Image (cartoon, rainbow, N blue to C red; front, side):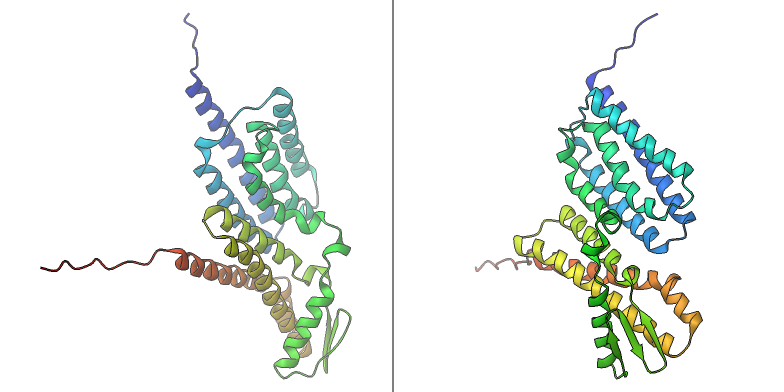
Length: 287
């Protein structure tokens, strides 16, 4: 029998194939579990983040140094195995689903390139971290409920409603709402910051634009969510419980998230248009 010797190119392609297969499997599991968790906001964000991160990694696949040591490979596989075991055993997956993308990406990066190669994936890892940030950071640090309540009350007052506010409570003549942390918009803000980072990684921008994009992303998320909170206040005042549930827990909340993403997309498209060189008319030759 003849022994088969793999060339370095063949080994590299083998490694890329297995990493691609593992990554695709992890993404499929996360998307499936998110669908079962009935979390439309996270589901839509996960589709966008996974698609953008996968596109970035695929574009840079030939530049990656796939040199992982024994310990880093073992650690990466262990992290992925723990995530899979947790996914199969947990009864409530809602909080875990926010954390698993960044954990899986870290394990896959360790498996591919080891500790020294992690810097190759720092942008993609940071972008996925923004999905998990609302669950990882202390609530006292990121609770913007009073600010959201204040701005939503201002929107209601400016549009002609008789409104009063006390802390996170907004009072209208026939009803009131309480803006707790889940409705403060912090989750949408972090998601939009992650999308802004992905945009910065995918397209060349100047220094001022790199600062402006995250600021605009966070501002749009805050304003759009505040409008949603103001709308829910109106619905409570009109005693329309069915419409309130739709905009609070149903697909209505997803619509506002899509509006924020669309507005950010339009702004980024405008920036890219500004960076395109203007077509110069050819000089006519005089005879």
